[in-house]
Image (tube, rainbow, N blue to C red):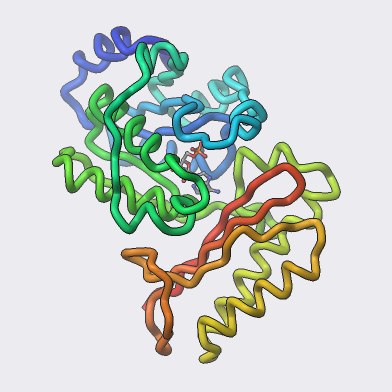
Amino acid sequence: MQLIFTQAELRTYLTRSTESIGFVPTMGALHEGHLQLIRRARQENAVVVCSIFVNPIQFNNADDLARYPRTLEQDCALLEAAGCDVVFAPSAAEMYPSQPVLTFDFGTLERVLEGAFRPGHFNGVGIVVSKLFHLVQPTRAYFGQKDLQQCLIVRRLIQDLSFPIELVIAPTVRETDGLAMSSRNRNLTADERALAPFIQAELQGAKTALEQGTSPAEVKAQVREAFAAQPAFQLEYFEIADIETLLPLEDHQSGQPAALCIAVHLGKVRLIDNLLLTA
Ligand code: AMP
């Protein structure tokens, strides 16, 4: 496995390859959620590239950026075992020799959920993913459903900018108690970690209620009440949304697809999760 730090070295390495390239962009502090993407890319491509870059311009909170775990050595060992060929781990100065002036506007898709609560986040995602796609020129790019809105933003980016890339979306990998795996879970205290499965349990409860015909407004009120009774948590949003546009669903018919999306603060850590109701 090659560890590469510069754009120039990456280009030199990849121009030798005329074969299919599977690409997994990450921010490191890798866990099983990331590794399933690497293994899938390994099965489907001749060359597997993983980027590890904590992208400063997608963070709208300086503390969150400062606290984001960085574990490059351990990540490289996990990637090698999962069959990765190339790790691209640039510095911020390497990725942004100057501050980008280009901005992305993803329309209504970025005005809801994460976009509404993290101003500028999807602009930062759009810029870094575009830069990485240009550098790596992958055949397939692998993203996790855990970040559902990001998947839809990247799908838009691929369509609107004609990137010749197949987007592969893999399911959310969870701990045995249901908590969605996340690099930020490492920042939870032991007490917070013990409480964290409540998020997934509430999502499951909301899904069942919706399937049984409870209205979206009623389900949302129940979830808000449940979190209000748990002082360790601060609910940022819980929404029942259209799975394509992520706009809120006012009504829900039996069997209608929907995305149940949540963001919660637990201590100093902000966690997101989602469940899909499929037809
Ligand atoms: P991150 O390092 O958090 O930027 O994540 C890199 C990629 O891994 C993104 O496409 C995420 O959606 C995906 N990912 C992160 N956590 C999980 C998880 N628990 N299950 C599935 N995919 C995940």
